Length: 101
Image (cartoon, rainbow, N blue to C red; front, side):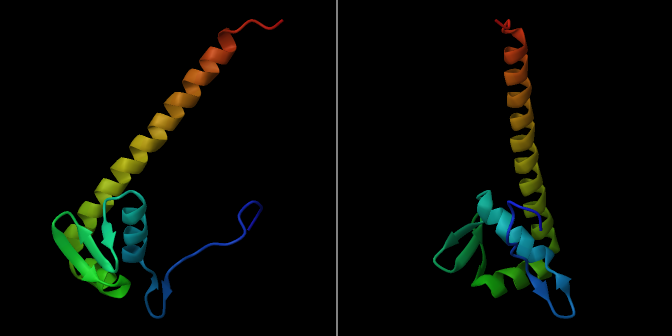
């Protein structure tokens, strides 16, 4: 990988490949869609599982809930990136309006 990225963490399972459910758990935790208390994972009032593997298995078995979590993560990341792009566009507009000396 090119600098500045030196390492990457992925969940790759034998006979399964990359785990979509593990990615959902990671992104859900980052964006606080999924909450973790010690080793218990929760989505809203629903207890997903005790431990990483149990939570991953629960999401694999409950595709409707996994899709709901995925939709919320996508909405959150889309809103964040749109807000970022709008902020950058406004700062460029402000910089262009300042006369050079």
